[in-house]
Amino acid sequence: MIKRSTVFTFIVLIFYPLFIVGTIPEIFRTPFDTETISRFIIPFHFQENANIPWAVMESTKWDIFRPVYSLSVLFDYVLWGTNARMYHVTDLILSWTCYILAFFLLKRQFGFLTAAIAVCLWAVHPAQPMSLLNIYGRNDRLVTLFTVAALSTYDISISKNVRRKSLFTLTLLFTVLAVLSKDTGIFYSLLLLPAWSFLVRKDSIRKIITSDHFLWLGLFLLAVLFVVLRHLAGFSASIDSEGINLGFRYFQGLSRLILMSLPIPSGWSPGTTAVCMVSAVATGATVFCRKCPKAMRFGALAFSVFIFPFPFFWIQESFLWGCSLWMSLWATGCAVFLYGKYIKPRGKKASLVSLMLLAVILSLSSLWSIRITRHISALFIRISDIAKYAVSTEEGPVYPQENIFSQFSDWRELDTFSDEEQCKINKYVIELIQLETGNPESVIE
Image (cartoon, rainbow, N blue to C red; front, side):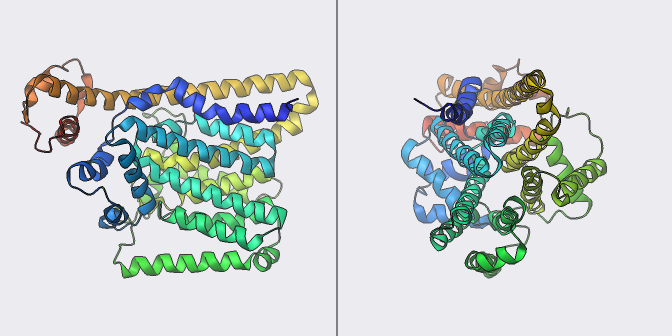
């Protein structure tokens, strides 16, 4: 006889791939994004750079070092060549793996209900499918995956109190993989691992330091090594941004990220200062209020930690992939607390109403995700259609721009693009044509 809890767990685990594949299949029809095709696919395909040494050092030209991310794209290229669909499948598998790890991590400490609602809310947040559309979102996916893995091994080590050094070593290994996926991984582990022990397990600071000193020493040495190696390599402090976003630029960026994560119309904004102040007060009050549930406290802190390093990076939608996990935990912790204290004591009818409300929230968030993702995907697919049309109607390698784009006169967005954006689209179309024809000499004139 299969236990009811096993059935519910299975339903939660398969929810993620069913939602993505069943409601937004356009993801798998989306071609390579502009960054991926220029940064990886063209060099792999035409410049004989499909090798491990090139992939390992590829990111250093931008004063970053992300070999795990670059090698993952090389691995896809070796397996699938220029078939973008399978790269998206790889990203789906990576995302699903992180989803599963997060569910079991949260379930061990916060219970089934909190874990299930948190990961399902995360699954239907637009950050999920938007990240899957662009292969460059994989660096955020990998750093979050390895950070959650590090938290999981650390939690197991302090929960079961067995083979602690082996599990601590594994935690350090996952931290290294996170850092080699995206530089922010060093911030995440340094701050979230001790916070997990303090806020979630409620261990004293003295106990945390004395019992886990092997792990903290390893993390400290990794952080020092990270800083020293970047300095010796001559990397800039701003990592992959033109400059460090400080002062008002920081508040502008933080406000933009927060608004991107909420269902607020793009034309309406309560103001940069207001958004930042409300967010800072809300997260700070949650973290430092001891009466708040531990799921709320850790979710708020982790959300803040994942947003904190953004001054060193370009702001893009995929950056919200990890943030939205902890934001979902924060909201879920609050909801479960209110349910247990005020709704559940009122009986089955009140519980049924709260269940229906949850279903409505998940449905609305799903519709929000589907709408945004389909809109963005349609742009990439339309540009890909332009490239395919050019290849099917012209011999090349020179393709007349006027003839190609005249077939898409009904595409209203073309009239709204600036000259700079039009140049980028032309370059993107050329690269797609080059991949379609296998001819790196193809051009548009």
